[in-house]
Length: 353
Image (cartoon, rainbow, N blue to C red; front, top):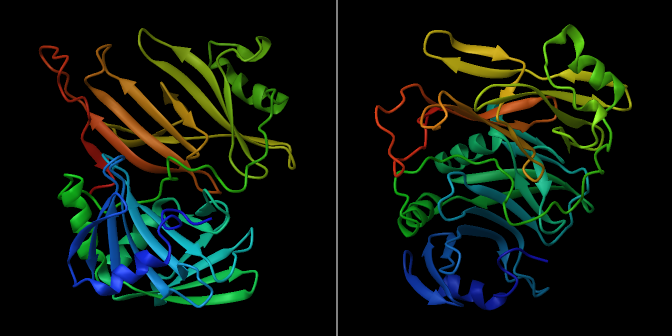
Protein backbone atom coordinates (compact mmCIF):
# COMPACT_ATOMS: atom_id res chain seq x y z
CA UNK A 1 0.00 0.00 0.00
CA UNK A 2 1.41 3.37 -1.02
CA UNK A 3 0.19 6.64 0.40
CA UNK A 4 -1.00 9.20 -2.14
CA UNK A 5 0.53 7.52 -5.19
CA UNK A 6 -1.27 4.20 -5.50
CA UNK A 7 -4.33 5.44 -7.43
CA UNK A 8 -2.10 7.20 -9.95
CA UNK A 9 0.56 4.60 -10.73
CA UNK A 10 2.93 4.77 -13.66
CA UNK A 11 0.93 7.38 -15.57
CA UNK A 12 1.75 9.93 -12.91
CA UNK A 13 5.50 9.48 -13.33
CA UNK A 14 5.21 9.62 -17.09
CA UNK A 15 3.73 13.09 -16.68
CA UNK A 16 6.64 14.12 -14.47
CA UNK A 17 9.12 13.92 -17.31
CA UNK A 18 6.82 15.15 -20.08
CA UNK A 19 6.02 18.63 -18.77
CA UNK A 20 8.45 21.58 -18.60
CA UNK A 21 9.88 22.67 -15.28
CA UNK A 22 7.45 24.73 -13.22
CA UNK A 23 4.50 23.75 -15.41
CA UNK A 24 1.17 23.00 -13.75
CA UNK A 25 -1.69 20.72 -14.68
CA UNK A 26 -5.09 19.54 -13.46
CA UNK A 27 -4.87 15.75 -13.24
CA UNK A 28 -6.80 13.10 -11.34
CA UNK A 29 -8.76 15.81 -9.54
CA UNK A 30 -5.56 17.44 -8.27
CA UNK A 31 -3.65 20.55 -9.14
CA UNK A 32 -0.05 19.68 -9.93
CA UNK A 33 3.19 21.42 -10.73
CA UNK A 34 6.70 20.18 -11.48
CA UNK A 35 9.91 21.75 -10.21
CA UNK A 36 13.08 20.04 -11.41
CA UNK A 37 13.16 16.66 -9.61
CA UNK A 38 10.03 17.22 -7.50
CA UNK A 39 6.34 16.71 -8.25
CA UNK A 40 3.89 18.83 -6.25
CA UNK A 41 0.15 18.25 -5.93
CA UNK A 42 -2.79 19.69 -3.98
CA UNK A 43 -6.16 18.08 -3.41
CA UNK A 44 -8.94 20.67 -3.73
CA UNK A 45 -11.34 18.54 -1.70
CA UNK A 46 -9.14 18.48 1.42
CA UNK A 47 -6.54 21.19 0.83
CA UNK A 48 -3.73 18.71 1.51
CA UNK A 49 -0.57 19.37 -0.54
CA UNK A 50 2.65 17.42 -0.98
CA UNK A 51 5.95 17.48 -2.84
CA UNK A 52 7.57 14.22 -3.90
CA UNK A 53 10.82 12.95 -5.39
CA UNK A 54 11.80 9.42 -6.39
CA UNK A 55 14.65 6.94 -6.70
CA UNK A 56 14.32 4.90 -9.91
CA UNK A 57 10.83 5.93 -11.03
CA UNK A 58 8.88 3.41 -13.12
CA UNK A 59 11.12 0.37 -12.48
CA UNK A 60 10.53 -2.81 -14.54
CA UNK A 61 8.59 -4.26 -11.61
CA UNK A 62 5.73 -1.87 -12.40
CA UNK A 63 5.97 -0.09 -9.03
CA UNK A 64 5.76 3.69 -8.78
CA UNK A 65 9.43 3.88 -7.75
CA UNK A 66 11.96 2.05 -5.62
CA UNK A 67 11.95 4.74 -2.91
CA UNK A 68 9.82 7.86 -2.43
CA UNK A 69 10.62 10.93 -0.33
CA UNK A 70 7.68 13.20 0.45
CA UNK A 71 7.13 16.54 2.18
CA UNK A 72 3.48 17.45 2.75
CA UNK A 73 1.19 19.65 4.79
CA UNK A 74 -2.50 19.69 5.62
CA UNK A 75 -4.54 22.82 4.95
CA UNK A 76 -4.19 25.35 7.83
CA UNK A 77 -1.58 23.17 9.56
CA UNK A 78 1.66 24.69 10.82
CA UNK A 79 3.86 21.59 10.68
CA UNK A 80 5.01 19.80 7.57
CA UNK A 81 5.10 16.00 7.32
CA UNK A 82 8.25 14.25 6.05
CA UNK A 83 8.00 10.62 5.04
CA UNK A 84 10.06 7.96 3.30
CA UNK A 85 8.23 5.16 1.45
CA UNK A 86 10.22 2.04 0.65
CA UNK A 87 9.03 -0.13 -2.25
CA UNK A 88 12.05 -2.09 -3.46
CA UNK A 89 12.74 -3.40 0.05
CA UNK A 90 10.69 -3.45 3.25
CA UNK A 91 11.99 -1.80 6.43
CA UNK A 92 12.44 -3.93 9.51
CA UNK A 93 10.07 -3.33 12.41
CA UNK A 94 12.88 -1.74 14.45
CA UNK A 95 14.59 0.03 11.54
CA UNK A 96 17.33 2.50 12.32
CA UNK A 97 17.72 5.42 9.90
CA UNK A 98 20.70 7.75 9.50
CA UNK A 99 20.74 11.01 7.55
CA UNK A 100 24.39 11.47 6.67
CA UNK A 101 25.78 14.99 6.98
CA UNK A 102 29.26 14.74 8.49
CA UNK A 103 29.37 16.07 12.07
CA UNK A 104 25.68 17.06 11.81
CA UNK A 105 24.42 13.56 11.04
CA UNK A 106 20.88 12.89 12.32
CA UNK A 107 19.76 9.57 13.79
CA UNK A 108 16.13 8.40 13.79
CA UNK A 109 15.08 5.40 15.87
CA UNK A 110 11.87 3.41 15.59
CA UNK A 111 9.24 3.71 16.89
CA UNK A 112 9.92 7.12 18.49
CA UNK A 113 11.53 9.52 16.02
CA UNK A 114 10.72 7.25 13.05
CA UNK A 115 7.37 5.46 12.85
CA UNK A 116 5.23 3.80 10.20
CA UNK A 117 1.75 5.25 9.62
CA UNK A 118 -0.89 3.94 7.25
CA UNK A 119 1.35 1.16 5.90
CA UNK A 120 4.41 -0.68 7.19
CA UNK A 121 6.62 0.88 4.51
CA UNK A 122 5.55 4.52 5.08
CA UNK A 123 8.06 5.90 7.58
CA UNK A 124 7.44 9.35 9.09
CA UNK A 125 10.08 11.50 10.79
CA UNK A 126 8.92 12.69 14.22
CA UNK A 127 10.04 15.09 16.95
CA UNK A 128 12.27 18.15 16.89
CA UNK A 129 14.90 16.40 14.75
CA UNK A 130 12.35 16.31 11.94
CA UNK A 131 12.57 20.11 11.79
CA UNK A 132 16.37 19.89 11.70
CA UNK A 133 16.05 17.41 8.85
CA UNK A 134 13.75 19.73 6.90
CA UNK A 135 16.17 22.63 7.36
CA UNK A 136 19.03 20.48 6.08
CA UNK A 137 16.98 19.45 3.06
CA UNK A 138 16.30 23.07 2.15
CA UNK A 139 20.00 23.95 2.40
CA UNK A 140 21.43 21.03 0.41
CA UNK A 141 21.31 19.63 -3.12
CA UNK A 142 21.16 15.95 -2.17
CA UNK A 143 20.06 13.91 0.83
CA UNK A 144 21.84 10.68 1.76
CA UNK A 145 19.84 8.25 3.90
CA UNK A 146 20.94 4.89 5.31
CA UNK A 147 18.15 2.53 6.35
CA UNK A 148 17.94 -0.99 7.77
CA UNK A 149 15.66 -3.17 5.63
CA UNK A 150 14.83 -6.85 5.31
CA UNK A 151 17.34 -6.97 2.43
CA UNK A 152 20.08 -5.43 4.54
CA UNK A 153 21.48 -1.93 4.92
CA UNK A 154 20.44 0.43 2.10
CA UNK A 155 22.14 3.72 1.20
CA UNK A 156 19.73 6.05 -0.61
CA UNK A 157 20.48 9.38 -2.27
CA UNK A 158 17.63 11.74 -3.13
CA UNK A 159 17.87 14.88 -5.24
CA UNK A 160 16.68 18.00 -3.44
CA UNK A 161 16.74 20.15 -6.56
CA UNK A 162 13.31 21.78 -6.78
CA UNK A 163 12.24 21.20 -3.18
CA UNK A 164 12.39 24.87 -2.16
CA UNK A 165 10.33 25.94 -5.19
CA UNK A 166 7.86 23.13 -4.49
CA UNK A 167 7.27 24.24 -0.91
CA UNK A 168 6.86 27.86 -1.98
CA UNK A 169 4.26 26.71 -4.51
CA UNK A 170 2.42 24.83 -1.75
CA UNK A 171 2.56 27.94 0.44
CA UNK A 172 0.86 29.86 -2.33
CA UNK A 173 -1.81 27.19 -2.87
CA UNK A 174 -2.59 27.06 0.87
CA UNK A 175 -2.49 30.84 1.35
CA UNK A 176 0.41 30.34 3.79
CA UNK A 177 3.23 32.38 2.27
CA UNK A 178 5.91 33.01 4.90
CA UNK A 179 4.91 30.02 7.03
CA UNK A 180 7.64 28.39 9.19
CA UNK A 181 9.62 25.35 8.04
CA UNK A 182 8.86 23.08 10.98
CA UNK A 183 7.98 19.39 11.13
CA UNK A 184 7.72 16.46 13.50
CA UNK A 185 4.10 15.63 14.40
CA UNK A 186 2.45 12.36 13.45
CA UNK A 187 0.14 12.52 10.41
CA UNK A 188 -3.37 13.33 11.56
CA UNK A 189 -5.29 11.04 9.20
CA UNK A 190 -3.33 7.77 9.51
CA UNK A 191 -2.97 5.25 12.33
CA UNK A 192 0.30 3.64 13.35
CA UNK A 193 1.07 0.57 11.29
CA UNK A 194 2.31 -1.20 14.44
CA UNK A 195 -0.10 -0.65 17.32
CA UNK A 196 1.23 0.12 20.78
CA UNK A 197 0.29 -2.18 23.68
CA UNK A 198 -2.94 -1.50 25.53
CA UNK A 199 -2.23 0.89 28.44
CA UNK A 200 -2.92 -0.21 32.03
CA UNK A 201 -6.53 -0.09 33.18
CA UNK A 202 -5.67 0.72 36.80
CA UNK A 203 -3.36 3.16 38.51
CA UNK A 204 -0.29 1.28 39.80
CA UNK A 205 0.29 1.70 43.51
CA UNK A 206 3.77 3.29 43.06
CA UNK A 207 2.12 5.99 40.88
CA UNK A 208 -0.56 6.60 43.50
CA UNK A 209 2.03 6.75 46.29
CA UNK A 210 4.10 9.30 44.37
CA UNK A 211 1.03 11.38 43.52
CA UNK A 212 -0.06 11.80 47.14
CA UNK A 213 3.40 12.11 48.63
CA UNK A 214 3.64 15.33 50.64
CA UNK A 215 -0.08 16.11 50.40
CA UNK A 216 0.43 18.57 47.53
CA UNK A 217 -2.71 17.45 45.70
CA UNK A 218 -6.32 17.98 46.75
CA UNK A 219 -8.02 15.36 44.58
CA UNK A 220 -8.11 11.65 45.26
CA UNK A 221 -9.24 9.93 42.06
CA UNK A 222 -7.82 6.55 43.04
CA UNK A 223 -10.97 5.27 44.72
CA UNK A 224 -13.33 6.16 41.87
CA UNK A 225 -13.13 4.14 38.68
CA UNK A 226 -12.05 6.29 35.68
CA UNK A 227 -12.72 9.48 37.66
CA UNK A 228 -10.62 12.33 36.34
CA UNK A 229 -7.45 10.44 35.41
CA UNK A 230 -6.15 9.26 32.05
CA UNK A 231 -3.36 7.03 30.80
CA UNK A 232 -1.49 6.98 27.47
CA UNK A 233 0.81 4.26 26.23
CA UNK A 234 4.11 5.78 25.11
CA UNK A 235 6.01 2.78 23.72
CA UNK A 236 6.32 -0.95 24.24
CA UNK A 237 6.98 -0.51 27.98
CA UNK A 238 6.34 2.99 29.28
CA UNK A 239 2.93 4.51 29.94
CA UNK A 240 2.04 8.02 31.05
CA UNK A 241 -0.51 8.68 33.79
CA UNK A 242 -2.30 12.03 34.10
CA UNK A 243 -3.82 12.54 37.56
CA UNK A 244 -5.72 15.68 38.62
CA UNK A 245 -4.09 17.55 41.48
CA UNK A 246 -5.96 20.77 42.30
CA UNK A 247 -8.26 23.33 40.72
CA UNK A 248 -9.20 26.98 40.77
CA UNK A 249 -12.05 28.94 39.27
CA UNK A 250 -11.12 28.13 35.64
CA UNK A 251 -7.90 26.11 35.78
CA UNK A 252 -7.35 22.42 36.55
CA UNK A 253 -3.82 21.36 37.53
CA UNK A 254 -2.70 17.80 36.79
CA UNK A 255 0.51 15.91 37.46
CA UNK A 256 2.10 13.33 35.17
CA UNK A 257 3.97 10.12 35.89
CA UNK A 258 5.81 7.70 33.63
CA UNK A 259 5.28 4.09 34.72
CA UNK A 260 7.64 1.29 33.70
CA UNK A 261 6.22 -2.08 34.77
CA UNK A 262 9.43 -3.98 34.00
CA UNK A 263 11.47 -1.89 36.41
CA UNK A 264 8.45 -1.16 38.63
CA UNK A 265 9.35 2.54 38.63
CA UNK A 266 7.18 5.66 38.66
CA UNK A 267 8.74 9.00 37.75
CA UNK A 268 7.14 12.41 38.15
CA UNK A 269 7.42 14.60 35.04
CA UNK A 270 8.52 18.24 35.00
CA UNK A 271 7.67 20.84 32.39
CA UNK A 272 8.99 24.26 31.45
CA UNK A 273 6.92 27.30 32.38
CA UNK A 274 7.36 30.94 31.47
CA UNK A 275 6.55 34.29 33.06
CA UNK A 276 7.60 37.87 32.37
CA UNK A 277 9.25 38.26 35.77
CA UNK A 278 10.50 34.70 36.34
CA UNK A 279 11.59 33.78 32.82
CA UNK A 280 11.84 30.07 32.05
CA UNK A 281 11.27 27.85 35.08
CA UNK A 282 10.31 24.23 35.81
CA UNK A 283 7.03 22.98 37.28
CA UNK A 284 5.72 19.49 38.10
CA UNK A 285 2.21 20.05 36.74
CA UNK A 286 0.31 21.25 33.68
CA UNK A 287 -2.80 23.41 33.57
CA UNK A 288 -5.92 22.26 31.70
CA UNK A 289 -3.94 19.50 29.96
CA UNK A 290 -5.00 17.37 27.02
CA UNK A 291 -3.29 14.14 25.92
CA UNK A 292 -3.27 12.93 22.31
CA UNK A 293 -2.48 9.19 22.08
CA UNK A 294 -2.13 9.40 18.28
CA UNK A 295 0.62 12.00 18.31
CA UNK A 296 1.97 11.01 21.74
CA UNK A 297 1.67 14.62 22.84
CA UNK A 298 0.44 16.56 25.86
CA UNK A 299 -0.95 20.06 25.46
CA UNK A 300 -1.69 22.63 28.15
CA UNK A 301 -3.69 25.87 28.30
CA UNK A 302 -3.26 28.06 31.35
CA UNK A 303 -5.83 30.87 31.54
CA UNK A 304 -4.87 34.11 33.24
CA UNK A 305 -8.58 34.88 33.47
CA UNK A 306 -11.78 32.99 32.72
CA UNK A 307 -12.27 34.49 29.25
CA UNK A 308 -9.13 32.71 28.09
CA UNK A 309 -7.83 35.66 26.07
CA UNK A 310 -4.49 35.69 27.92
CA UNK A 311 -2.26 33.03 29.40
CA UNK A 312 0.11 30.36 28.12
CA UNK A 313 -0.10 27.16 26.09
CA UNK A 314 2.45 24.46 25.34
CA UNK A 315 2.83 21.11 23.62
CA UNK A 316 5.18 18.30 24.64
CA UNK A 317 5.97 15.09 22.72
CA UNK A 318 7.34 11.77 23.94
CA UNK A 319 10.94 11.39 22.75
CA UNK A 320 11.88 8.04 24.27
CA UNK A 321 13.77 9.44 27.24
CA UNK A 322 11.16 11.95 28.35
CA UNK A 323 8.66 14.59 27.22
CA UNK A 324 10.22 17.06 24.81
CA UNK A 325 8.90 20.61 24.44
CA UNK A 326 7.67 21.16 20.88
CA UNK A 327 6.17 24.65 21.12
CA UNK A 328 5.17 27.26 23.67
CA UNK A 329 2.82 30.25 23.32
CA UNK A 330 2.47 33.16 25.73
CA UNK A 331 0.10 36.13 25.99
CA UNK A 332 0.58 38.05 29.25
CA UNK A 333 -1.77 40.96 28.52
CA UNK A 334 -5.53 40.58 28.85
CA UNK A 335 -7.76 42.76 26.69
CA UNK A 336 -9.51 45.73 28.27
CA UNK A 337 -12.77 44.78 26.57
CA UNK A 338 -13.74 41.24 25.66
CA UNK A 339 -14.23 40.69 21.95
CA UNK A 340 -15.80 37.34 21.07
CA UNK A 341 -14.45 37.66 17.53
CA UNK A 342 -10.88 38.36 18.61
CA UNK A 343 -8.02 36.08 17.53
CA UNK A 344 -7.14 34.03 20.62
CA UNK A 345 -3.95 32.56 19.14
CA UNK A 346 -1.16 33.46 21.56
CA UNK A 347 2.25 34.60 20.23
CA UNK A 348 4.73 31.74 19.90
CA UNK A 349 7.89 32.18 21.99
CA UNK A 350 9.36 28.69 21.46
CA UNK A 351 10.75 27.76 19.08
CA UNK A 352 11.45 31.10 17.49
CA UNK A 353 10.70 30.92 13.78
